[in-house]
Each structure stands twice: as C-alpha cells, then as structure tokens.
Image (cartoon, rainbow, N blue to C red; front, top):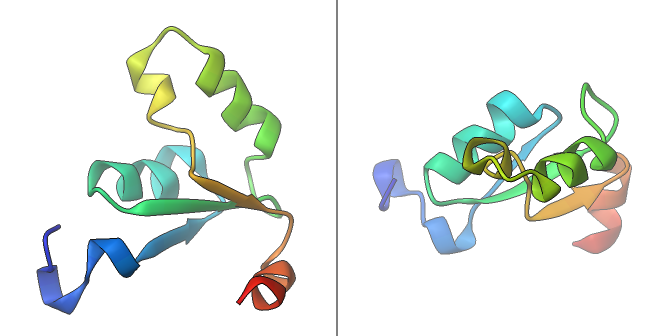
Length: 76
C-alpha cells in the first residue's frame, strides 16, 4: 500500500477490534495496527498468537493496544 490514495504508511495506523480482519489487513499492507479491546478480541488473544509457532497466527498481533477509543484521545 505504498502511498495508495495518498496514504503514507509511516503516518498511518489501522484501528480495529478484530484480529482476523482489521489487524491482519493492516499488517498485510505494511501499516501499524492498534487493537481496541472493546470488540471481539482482547490483548490476551493477541498474546496467544504472539507465542504461537504459526507464522499465520503471529500476523494477528497488533503493534499497539488500547482498552477503548476514549483512551485514544488522551494519547493524541
């Protein structure tokens, strides 16, 4: 996704609540990813994937985590 539609991968973060769709899409496109734990998946799910020997499961690990979108405003 090199500058596709004006998107700069170095300045873009995919925010999502599902590892198998949102986070995987971001990772496959070379973008940073942020898991919001108010949805389907939690940090513990990502940690299980991180510890897996499966490279496919390791792709389901986000770069960042937050408990809710309300926290995002505090970080910006």
